[in-house]
Length: 285
Image (tube, rainbow, N blue to C red; front, side, top):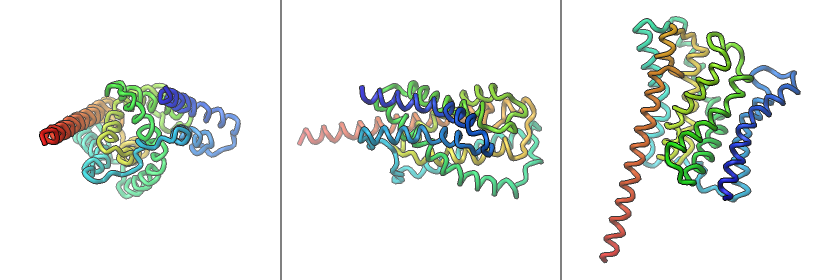
């Protein structure tokens, strides 16, 4: 009962945080755009809620703060590579087919931007990932929900947390070809699809850090390239090949998540077989 209560408190704080941030910015109007106190409140509130709930409950066992590198290096490499790899594949294919124009993308400018964005993302996403994968995901797992409910609930909370961000905090330059409302709905669907990968990487490694790295790579490569990198898609190219929201990229991300799920399930079955085999041998002795 206590676990469910704490989970509900976390979800309420999370979903309210963006709107409290919007109200704060309405009161404190003299602030730099894109770097307001309201945005700061929105970003850190879920993290602080998770931290306080753990502190009051004296519950730190599944926070995922240890890197657990042994046997998990391959998952760390995947977390760094998946978003850049899908971006190169989809954008490259779009350019070959004439569905994207990459002539406005200057590598001399992009590479430092990507490096800077990744560094900033590492810090920002510590707050996000220790909320979603460091608290919400393990608490849903502890309730023994099936995988699909875990994906749906954690994905919806993660996505709905961003609604205020898309509707109010993001600058107008992000909405040249799409409205704020339309992009919000698209983002909710996309994050639900991405969430499978994030959940499964946490479950495979029992660590939040692969999620931090993957989230930072997503911010630094596909998102930066689409919104600041001079990349231009045709209408059909945007629907199919956009590395953040295109159909092909989304299918690849969902497929990666489901493959990770299969690997995790097979590993858990093998672990059970090993334990049962050991118990049988011990019983014979």
